[in-house]
Image 1 (cartoon, one colour):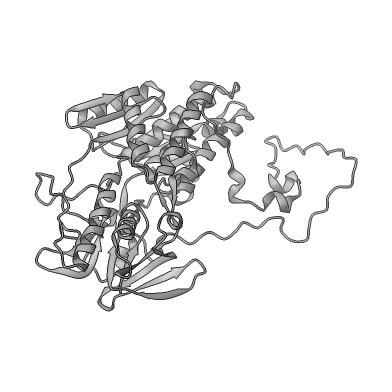
Image 2 (tube, rainbow, N blue to C red):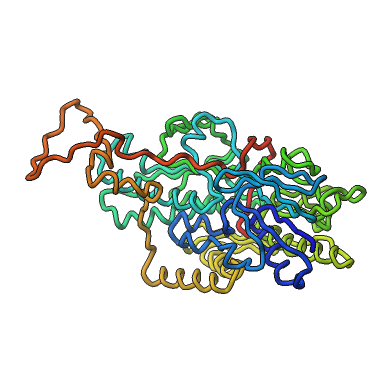
Length: 496
């Protein structure tokens, strides 16, 4: 029985394995999927998770619940030796072992592209994973809480300042969604005035949303500006040390939240730790039928799709064009890849990948959006409705479609339901502290240097333990170990 190894459970990997399950005959082949998370993230919903319009659990599609005939390994593939048909896997307990296979499917996806900007690694947060979207939401909410208790000044202003870097679909969508969230929050915080909010969108190019034409792109800039956003075009972030953002244009400000969505970079393991052919950007070289290699020199038993693959775009008139890294292509490539693997196993004919875009659509916050299909452009409420209709149909499984639709219906009736949960990342803090505020929130010395008044209690003060009250858990290992990704030309994921 042939052994098929799928590296990565994102869009392309999930849909490839799902289709293989449905179409493989009993005993024909065994499918193994390796992924460090155990679920597929429906990334187009992450901006709405950040704004509290979609529950985090609704964007995480359990691999075990839906891939019931696939062998699942929770871990990282750290190297691939295709010449010997083995992959090295590091499981969650830190142990490494080799997996043997007959057919390799590389769908590891991409990682967030970063730059050597001072302070970025300390202050920035991406938007590719569920936990990042939840953290963005919590930072906005806790920023409002903190600002409500502070007098006017620089510290209060920083808590009410959000900076998004990257004018692709992810950056523009989360920017618009956070503008909508902040407008709703103002009703709950009478201590905060709308004029105190500062939302900055920074893009290095002279326009945003490169997947749409100039007209809709300019409309989005005007629309976001009317809603209070500050859009900086042709600007690069030079520094973000201690939350102080400095742009190449000379502008600078303090920010309480820095969301980095400045494009994708190739997966470092795919780019540096396999014997597969890669291009100058670290993407796996594939043919139009998704087989690894070139038309003249295909690599036997190796396939690739999604954001980690340089897939020729047969629908483009531009010579040498590649498909853009978005959900439309990843899903369809995953399905075709599965069909071609089956055809190869059964001695049939493989098909080439050719897919014309269904259009692009972006949410800009509740009741705001933009949609373009060729010359047809929709904006405002109608485009927002198209966005929701498209994605409720595109999200995998009927069970999840129903859950998301019901959530949106309840939000239409009762409004946005958002509560910050910042302590989720420190679940033992309250238990260890035993209610002691000095442990939960260390005292900050007053600006005037005076000591605080003593608390009068009716019971003896709680004695501190001899050891530390709370030790933060160790930092989790990175999703892509070993090496940093090579520098690549920026690309932007779009939501459709």
